[in-house]
Length: 397
Ligand SMILES: Nc1ncnc2c1ncn2[C@@H]1O[C@H](COP(=O)(O)OP(=O)(O)OP(=O)(O)O)[C@@H](O)[C@H]1O
Ligand SMILES: [Mg+2]
Image (cartoon, rainbow, N blue to C red):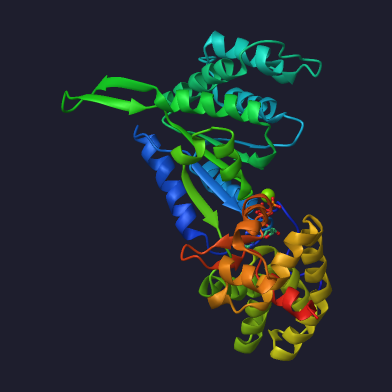
């Protein structure tokens, strides 16, 4: 029955959607990375970037679920500005160890690292944390390296892979980021030399530790400016809006999940209105769902739902625009009035009546810091948030 209770759409952030749309390229790559590490082959860390609400956390959650089902040891930590990400990782590692280190194989060093680094004690009774713990002057990078090494070795003995998922990486201060990436690189550089039982040949295995970091697009530039090579050493995945065919498949599945169906016109209307942006998919989808109670969602209900969702989308755009300064705003407003195929920085500068050279830092901030624009690789500027150009153009006098 189609009603508010059966609404399959879940607007919000950081939740795992009932239906996971698209992202098969990214998921295949992440799965392949873990499979190869399981075989002892080195794999670069992966860096997932994307605008707010583009689905980074959902991708990590979906991947985590799949990996847990495959028996991998997954530790996920979201960074906050208080610098607690390492303590959170330690906590996750301690939980994994407590769950799997049944025979107490974990080296005593790792136990003492957990105690020193995060005030964590792992015993047969469980995991406990000393909240007053102070890391003092110790080398966090080295300690973390030892802990990750010990855990990855244990994972190898259990024929599995330690999977580290770090979300909201843009929040980590540069000092902590340096220590974290140092530890990761050190562990990934360790090889174990073994003679192959069948062929007798020497094999050099990497430790099975997979790393995925996720964050806002500005992360890449921030790492570069801080002199970190992590960005260059990891394989990037930039999440963009979902493609139309993926979107249409997902809409069909969402509707089926709730016990209804979109007719073809209604599906097109919803797809147009959300532009493939995952957050909008839920906001628009939910309003359209609730615009009627029949088993088939038709175009009329879709149009009504889209109209009702519009103020929420406008709010979202307004919030994003509130982050930026006046010149950046006029840059965007002007760019929005130029047809997408002609939208280059030179054309925007001309329309603004200023030399391009004066607008470099404005454009740089819109791309790197705010992630509102990106370059499509051929010099054209693209609005990262679907529909923001239409929204601005409709508003301009
Ligand atoms: N592939 C997907 N299929 C269906 N829904 C999705 C998908 N990706 C994200 N969503 C939904 O979109 C919303 C935003 O996603 P999410 O919180 O993962 O974005 P994010 O990139 O992590 O944003 P932020 O930068 O604010 O943390 C959530 O409601 C989520 O359920
Ligand atoms: Mg997120």
